[in-house]
Amino acid sequence: MNQLVARAVLRRMIGGGRSCNRYLSTPPSAVAVVVTPLDEAVVLWRSQCWGFNGGGAQWRRNMSTDAETTTAVAEKDRKESAVAEEKKGDGEVMVSSYWGISRPKITREDGTEWPWNCFMPWETYRANLSIDLGKHHVPKTFLDKVAFRTVKILRIPTDIFFQRRYGCRAMMLETVAAVPGMVGGMLLHLRSLRKFEQSGGWIKALLEEAENERMHLMTMVELVKPKWYERLLVLTVQGVFFNAFFVLYMLSPKLAHRIVGYLEEEAIHSYTEYLKDIDDGKIENVPAPVIAIDYWRLPKDATLKDVITVIRADEAHHRDVNHFASDIHYEGKKLREAPAPLGYH
Ligand SMILES: [Fe+2]
Ligand SMILES: [Fe+2]
Image (cartoon, rainbow, N blue to C red):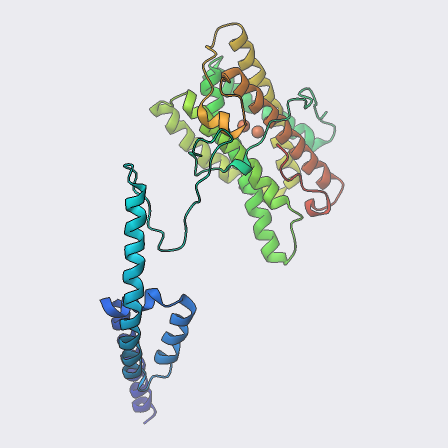
């Protein structure tokens, strides 16, 4: 008896579900669901489908009347989108603004159109070139010495592989340099969720660092085109380094940040050598890529030397951020207890 009742209830549940699914997938209802604000559509769907009895018929009635009114709205939206596409009319296809997402026209200071979607004018900055490039954290503790030695050992294969090809070297190293900030930011983000606590701005600060490093890479690829075997090397190194750094950060953020601090010291050294080769005429001082001119607010006639100079200043900032983060851990505190270096490039 109980089984019979259970089967009847189950049949009605399945029947109701199918009814709603079918109506959601047929054209008139689909239009209605899309045009109705999402919350209303969900409430409507739940109220009609959840009751299991008579819901299907009521749902159909509501949807058929709603469909008539909302189809007109959808038609109007389609026409507006078409007008927008026509207005563009310069060969570029403008994405439909149906979802309400559109970018207002943004211009540079000289009135020309802002060409980038990957960063906006308010995210650009002038690098602080007065930063002390010679600062060094003297390794004193055992962990500091491990970090220092690890970075020095990692430099050996890099020196052998690239020698003085600083363009390739910088491009390849930037693919690695953008990983720690993302891993650290991600793990702090997860910690914030797990522990129901603020990160003190450090999630954003580390993600900003990752983004800044990625912009270094986006600039370098404008200057150096990676070869197929270099792309293969990036794949391998990223696979290994991401996982290794992830595990390291979970085990000892203190050591992880210290290693990054020393990596940044090496980056400053590499870019200084790069600049020497430009000054000596071994590397041509070509015009700066447009993306670099916009990102660092460089003058229009900026050159490669200017770009490398601002990137090196960024690396010095990353060095400070990561040694600072490690020092906070050394003092037995959490990162959120110290000021997060937001916007510190
Ligand atoms: Fe970098
Ligand atoms: Fe860096």
